[in-house]
Amino acid sequence: MANVTKNRPLSPHLQIYRFVPTMAMSIVHRITGGALYFGTVLVAAWLIAAASGEEYFNQVNWFFGSIVGQVILFGYTWAMLHHLIGGLRHIMWDLGYGFEKEFSTMLAKANLVASVVLTVLVWAVVLIIR
Amino acid sequence: MDMRTPLGKVRGLGSAKSGTEHFWKVRTTSVALVPLLLFYLGFLVMYAGRPYADVISALSNPFIATINALTIIASIVHMRLGMEEILQDYIHSEKMKLALLILNSFFSLLVGGLCLFAALKIAF
Image (cartoon, rainbow over all chains, first blue to last red):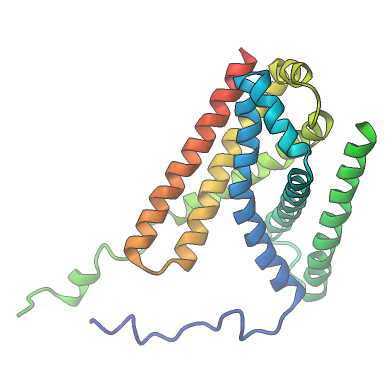
């Protein structure tokens, strides 16, 4: 019984398969998910500072307004939009649609393009409103 | 001499039979998060960098406070389940996996609890 699990064949992993858009976006979906996980600390910091009083809030606001803060927030926006659009693709697949090779490859590319375009759009609106 | 049958040895080592529930919770929260986060993103775009008084008055609005709390709850449940999946996929040492799974739950609950408390403190 002991060696049963050790001798099982393993399925090929990333370095074996040819690199294709659907696979790349699957990986990015997981990476953005992991990044967003830790990114919630940013939202927490903002909310807790707002709840703690004006002095704390101004400090956190200053950080988010600094160049480092802005770069982090820009990345956070992109990660969120990419993960959200990727999530929509997953809902579509869960409902049983969109498994055709050409279509899913097209959607994988569209996911990347749309996430970048929407992120730039959101930040353009931010800069115009401000 | 081992008197246990092969079947007896593997009983209880199979699936936890909670996979469907995990899948379903991830999907349910993801469906909820699509409109919630689009609203949230819009809100953040409007209020990022605005003075303290403006932000506080916006977050005190009952509608925004409700959206805020719902987004926090759905996000925390979703991210905890997502990280659970990542840990189970990549961490092969049993002890390390258990430790990180517990840490994942603690981190999620801590961040979620702090966010909710802050949101409610501002709202009331």
